[in-house]
Length: 118
Image 1 (cartoon, helix red, strand yellow):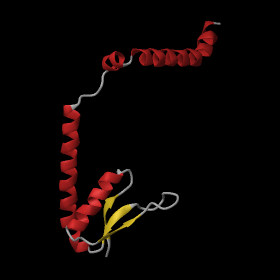
Image 2 (cartoon, one colour; image 1 turned 90 degrees about the vertical axis):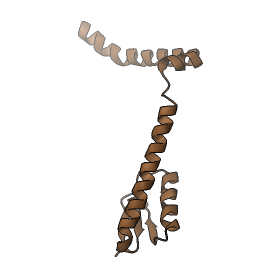
Image 3 (cartoon, rainbow, N blue to C red; image 1 turned 30 degrees about the horizontal axis):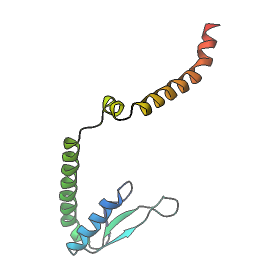
Image 4 (spheres, rainbow, N blue to C red; image 1 turned 45 degrees about the vertical axis):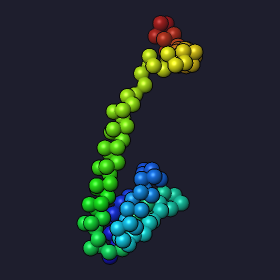
């Protein structure tokens, strides 16, 4: 009986293709289902033979752990951009969007401030 081994909901195309290739490279018979037109079905990769589940799970878990470490290393190598970094790179853009945000905030809150002051 077929068994769901990997859900594709919210998974990047790159990761989904890597898992497809991983299953194919290890001669694990599988097929794919889509979420359907309205997204109510199960989008996933299914194993044809339930006996392959343990091997496939180990392969996918090892792949995902490797992927996790890869992205953690990327995050450590390039720390996130700070407000000061962004301001140094393009001060006019930062000033423009700051003024725009302040204007929207003022226009949103001004009726309530007038109501409270009456």
